Length: 284
Image 1 (cartoon, rainbow, N blue to C red):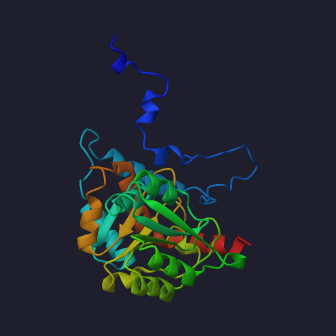
Image 2: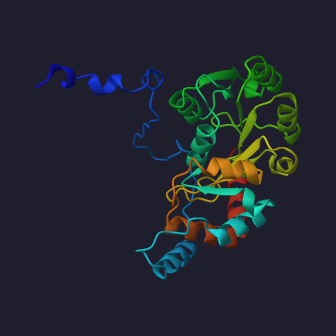
Image 3: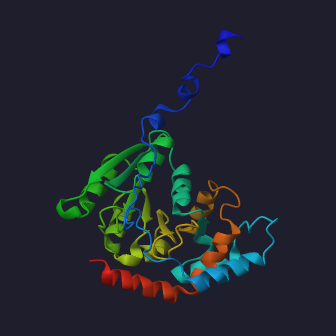
């Protein structure tokens, strides 16, 4: 065998980018426990009658066909629910996929991502995968957002992306809409406003979308809606920006059962809202 093509123990690893090898993988330590709190899941399962409605809907659909390339009815329902343009609505296999797509179409080598620290670890990992530079800005005492320092850092480092996770995972810190607007006004970055937990507190940045093309708002059905096991996320942006982010999504990325579950959840959002209020009342 030619020595030049002989595969040593580390040959494959040498082909992986050093910035990726140096990052810890996104992992989960899940010891057995009496009460499972480590992933911020809904405390109760999706209602049995709503599950039955989802399964009945899926049973009527042909399984040998791909799901809709763009689920227009669902997209219109989401647009009505969030008060936004259907052309600016993207659906994903969890909001994680949409975060990945937004960073993929934005980051070139050494582009800077500024984010609060600590925050959802996927942002740091994906920035490394895309050859970007990640800069974390610590919270003030009491885990209060330091919006002044975030903006200053984004300005000084010429940030391409500014992550505002609000309410933040894992600290619960929330920003006001005025803070998000200030970040848009005072930086030149794409502002990713991750609102995975906004149903439980804080203000949404959705009203700012109409006047800011550099804003992308992420939502998920994993937390308040209780569909973590089916993986469904939504990104909202101005239509021209949404079309570019869509180029980084895989085709047919959301399966027909998840699409059906999202439709049913939206049709019964009053029930979801009621359960959210119960969690808010009981969480302390």
